[in-house]
Each structure stands twice: as structure tokens, then as C-alpha cells.
Image (cartoon, rainbow, N blue to C red):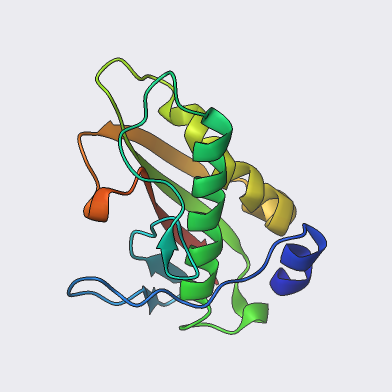
Length: 149
């Protein structure tokens, strides 16, 4: 089960963050769950803000991306039972980046590695990781997840 694997990893499945604009956290269509972009929110606070630069901690950014993935699981559980969620199809990672920062793919590994840890082979997925000028509420990272059910 998903929550058991999360606990075994020493992590906590969070409460769903309320939307900050006009959208819902997740939508299910047939055998697919689409999550809205998840920010690195934990207990109502952003874990990381501002632009990613080469001088900022890659590990901190990866940890923020892990929180985004946990938030996406929580959102998916609003529209499906835990035993229905089979795996991860695709991740879309956004990193607020300075023009010379080119390690967005390494930041995204925080979510990708956690997906593999929680879902095993069903957590291996397609992905994109892009740098953007800014993200909502000054978050450093945002993550979209597509789950299979």
C-alpha cells in the first residue's frame, strides 16, 4: 500500500493543500488521475522560495520536489482509493531558475526517485523538467503528476 511505503521511507502523507486559485487538486478520467500543480507546501508553509541558482542547495530543492510528490499523492487520494492507484505515468517538474541554472533535471530527481521508492517499477515514468522565470507565491518548484489507476 502507498501509505505503508511512505511511512517505511520515514515520510508522512500530508493533508491536501487547499487550492490557491480556481482549480481542484486532482481530476480522475477513466484510468488516469491528473493532479494540479503541487507546490512544496508542508503544514501550510512553503519549504523553499525564490529562484534556483548554482549556489543554492540542490539537496534542498530535491527535498522540496519530494514534498510536491507527496502532496500529489494526497491530491490523487481525493479521487481514488489507495488500492486503485497503480503507478506514475508522467511527472512535469517546474523549477524557478536563474538563466544560467541548468540542473532542473537533477532537482526533478527528488520526485522521480521518491516515485520509484513508493511504487517500485510502476513508479518509473516519463518526465519533463523545465526552468521558468517564476512560480506561484514565489515557490522554487512545482510538480504535476499523472497517475494510472
